[in-house]
Image (cartoon, rainbow, N blue to C red; front, top):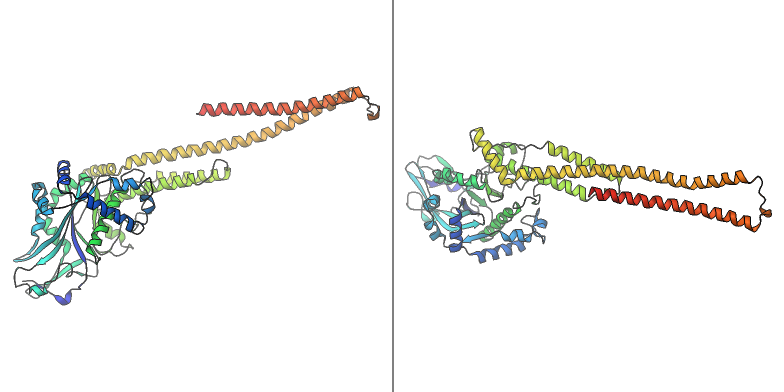
Length: 486
């Protein structure tokens, strides 16, 4: 029989929960929400948590989520904590048979059985029909052969963390050998017969490669529960619009990979989500690639990376364009044109490759990746980005041409003015030279003086009139040209 090896166990205060995600059909969802939801309590919980954690829960997106134009996005999508879960589990049809298994958790090893008891069963349902079943697990002592009731430790306290960070139960077999059982193994063993039935519905909803165990180092389980589901709630809303805020700077950013013990991560994508299981790597380092290939669906992260990369390019392009006064600055225009062409080159070199280890054949993998692209709206974003870059690039080139043309026109205007000034003067000088042999100012009579004065005034008036007429004609032609473009 198994006995607990006390000296091999590091006692720690953990809030251990098992999280199991599942999908409701449309009919089931409508019926369940009407019968079991306690929406008022949950909405109050979310609002309180928003006020409390807006700057610490998701600091990278707080400014986006809590701006006036985006506040409604956070509150419009329903999320419900269901009550009377015991009755609900009994009401569910056979396709949700997997939920029944949680009521009779046990691990069989040869002739030995370790039994568990379930506490604090809760079900949360998001507005798109995705559900999460949560519960606490305790060891249940049914025989005196394992250990005395007084030495049975709560399941929250008996797992130890080995050097790789994996949570294990260390047991001593009756032959003296030590057996270490992973908590993931416990859950996988129980659910192994049901996984294939569930995966299909998860693929349809956008879930890939999920696991079931979550551990967090929180002393207050209620605070942990509230903050966790508020966190999931925020993430669900971040991907509901194609122009969502950029939340990740690079592929290996900590928001994709957030190891805190053993963690379930959740990312929502237009009506679906991802649950992935971190089995213990503590930091992103040189072994990150090996860890991610072993423990995650690389396809999920690459698909997410594609979306974020395109949003990042879009944001980079928009900021560079809006923050630069390029209309009246030829130098800035050339700098902006260079930046745009550089971004365009990056965009052209952007690849959309993906790998799904859940599929053994290329055809199935490609079909699923197409569905995944649709779930992410990758094609729409790609086309929108390409169109935006091309439009801005063409506009910048037009501005460059317009500024060059304006410079040439300004030079021509200067030459026009100089010409208009000197032509009448030359005419006047020539007239005087041809008709007067010798001019004595003191001998001029009043009549001759008036004639000279009138001639000079006419010449000045002619110069001013011609300059004004040319300006009016140029303005008229420019307006006609702009109207034609519109």
